[in-house]
Image 1 (cartoon, rainbow, N blue to C red):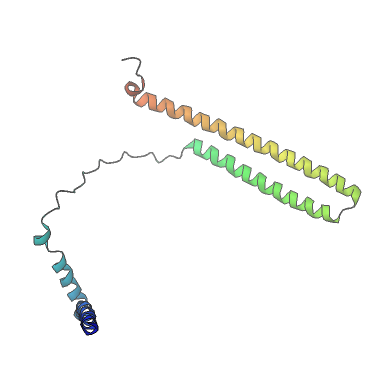
Image 2 (cartoon, rainbow, N blue to C red; image 1 turned 90 degrees about the horizontal axis):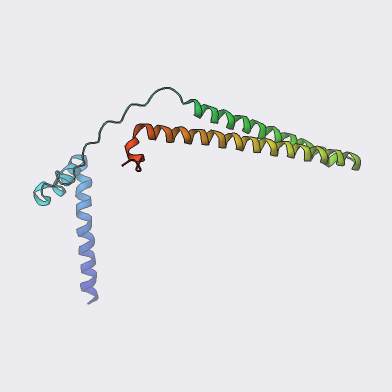
Amino acid sequence: MKRNFVTLLAALGVGAGVPSARAQQAGDSGAADVRSELQSPERQGDRSDRHRKPERPDRPERSDTKRPDKEVVRQLVDTFRAQAEDYKKQQQELARKLKDATDEDRAKIRDEIKQLRDNFQEAKDQFRDQIKEQSNKLNSELIRKIKDEKPDKHNFKDK
């Protein structure tokens, strides 16, 4: 029983190794032959027309001009990032001063830190409001453009 099992495993191992050895000996040209044998159209049938995707229409050209609204938002973000970096540097400097300061100086430095934090909070609020304003402006312009392009689809009450 064991002898039959070992013989079977050996036969399978040799049988599995023969095609790979044959492909290695054949080189690139042999690999192309093996591929052509595997993909013969006679066995699989002609299925080229069944799954053909429909042709897509051409995309409309976009204008090459930059959108000014995008530039305004980018400028707002860049300005706020610069303010945030300044705030961070000033806060780190005050924290260093706080370590080496006397008790009287510490109270003054803490007041400066508090004032700096309040100023940055105001800058954050102002930035948020400006971004919201730009967002609302863009949304209203987009809605107006959509209504201008397709008025019949968006005015259901007229029908």
